[in-house]
Image (cartoon, rainbow, N blue to C red; front, side):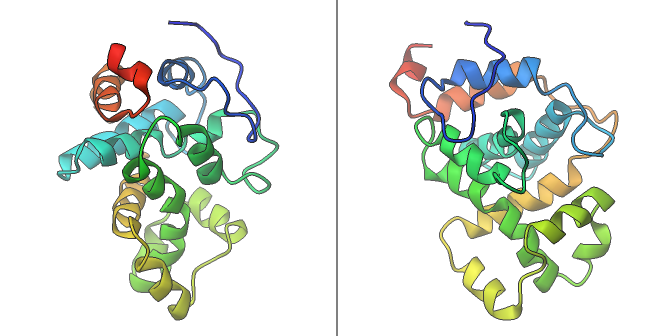
Length: 195
């Protein structure tokens, strides 16, 4: 595997491989996840672990692991380049819509849950509450109704709930290699078959 730790800008996805994504998780995800008590890698592993424990299939477990991969790029800010859109741009040639669409929709799922679940807002971390403001705030009832009709919106809502819960310092999870095998099993890029 190539040890490559420089990340591309949001508009550049040439040469993105599954091995490169894994390298980013190994070498760039050890920093704190926003203002949370876990690293980005711990957050990703916890989210994937929660997905698997909830009965999600391999594609949704992969989405849970990779939903914040956009945070590992050299973008100016999440406000200018939303991490969910960056992630989809990077992953679109590696995975099908069952992986990329829940990732694309997971931020909007937070906006949706603020409308349909009266207790949701109070359960968000302070960091997540702050980010919701610049992500557009809670949907209104009409926007929420339109959101949930989208294909993969239900999976995005499941992903969002795991995302919110995956911030526990010291939580035990399988290691990254365990989830890499799952990712390889759903990767659509021809090179993944040879790996």
